[in-house]
Amino acid sequence: MEQAYLRKIQMSGGSTLIVSLPKKWVKSVGLKKLDELLMVPQPEGTLLIMPYKKGVTNEACIEFSSQTTADEIVRAYISYYLAGYDTIRIKFERPLPELAQKVKDSIRRWLVGVEIVEESSIDMLTICLPIHANLPLKNAIERMGKIASAMQKESLMAFVEGDKSLAQEIVARDDEVDRLYHFIVRQLNLAISNPLILLSLGLSSRQDCLGYMLVAKSIERAADHALAIAESVNTSKPNNSNIMEVIEKVGKLSNALFEDALSALLKGDIKLANDVIFRAYDLVRKIEDAEVHLLYPKHNMSFAILVRSALGNIKRISEYSADISEVTVNLSVAKPMITIGPISP
Image 1 (cartoon, rainbow, N blue to C red):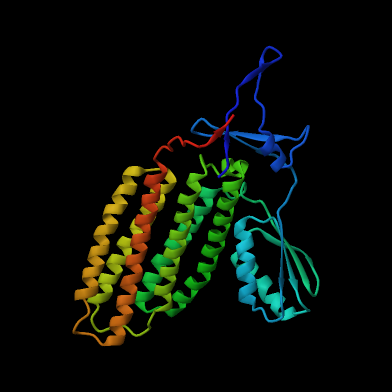
Image 2 (image 1 turned 180 degrees about the vertical axis):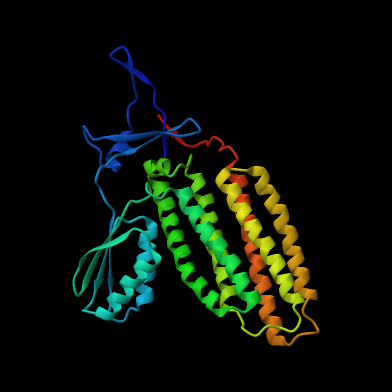
């Protein structure tokens, strides 16, 4: 466990207050005379002090054998991207042009702000641009939420009407949600370790990062459930339209919950957030009742499975709306002071 250090404030020159730095810490971070320190006041009244190294970048190099698949390479690359590395180099054991092209296509498809700056037959150098200032956190979440909401509305319409062409359009939009999700998680990971990025994202403390990560994940999962509804669209309509009317009704209620949850988060509206939570629980109960009583014994098993799957996806979207609202409530709570020990003189 790291120690906490106790220091007395001293006067220098009659008007300047100074405090000495712990020698052990200075050595451990490699500081020397005339180096700069970054001091960031925290909301709870503390002062965060850390070395300031301008122009220093985090670099990662990943090497792959000829047996590695494109999915494995992309998965590893995304891990380094999310961790906040500025420069990521990919090295191949031997020239693999088809594999390299698949990797490039996937990176462009799923990640925001990545540029390929150097490339050879066995080497690819990429940089991850620091574009958090051009796309603030809440703007990215709002944009991600709007896409996910539109996916819910159109997947519901496609399912009820049996419109396969509309369903296929929804699939492409899920990629944009994934791109924004990866971007948001990267920014939050950077903010945890860099107070300047934390401030630029408009967050008051590092504890807020966890809440927004949960929000981003809930939006991404809600989009996945909308995608699942679209992928299950069947062009053959049932003789009994009552089932589709029920699905359409609960689907619209679920989407209204999702949009209200996002609105409560972005506005900091605790009253609306609590209202969403109560409505979500009520809607989930109604969907569960529909799952039990709606289908039998009038319809065949394949149709019953299809409808139950749609209702299940709508239910999960409602639950994610409640999760987003719970984060909104949690973010409104003032952060308590933290006691650290032991303290060294």
